Length: 187
Image 1 (cartoon, rainbow, N blue to C red):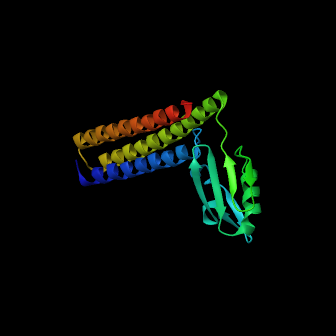
Image 2 (image 1 turned 30 degrees about the horizontal axis):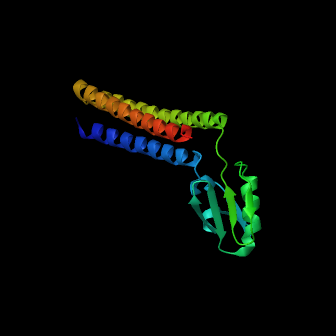
Image 3 (image 1 turned 45 degrees about the vertical axis):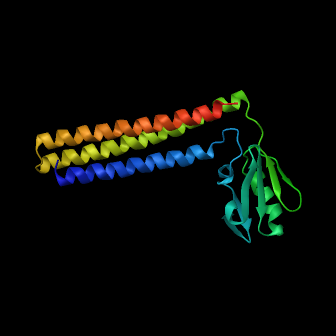
């Protein structure tokens, strides 16, 4: 395989790795019934006039599987943090005791679990679209190189390698989804 085909495949592999990384981040945000600080990652708090991520104004941790504890670095931030959590509409009811905010993570209903699995599958499909898009770009680049002068055999070899990588990454996505689905559906 020539140098240009190798670069094309390496570039495609890097894009596919980004798709997998993005999927992992998105799946981590979907709660599986257990308390997880990443559930609050999308929340931004009004900190002296600027929208600041929650984890930059407070310590967020989980003392047990059903509780998230938020300890702001400044007591004056308790109110804004509480409002931001309620405004985020995550289905949490924060309780402010004057020093920390506790969030009791309610157990998931069967219906909610099924909705979360659907959401996971949608994220997986988005990742697969990214993988297929990377494959298309790589195949197009190989076809351009075929017109410029690489041999027919080199082009076929590159396309075979591209398809093998596509299949590998699709399987990785399926494994991630399977793991997350088990995690969500386990009561």
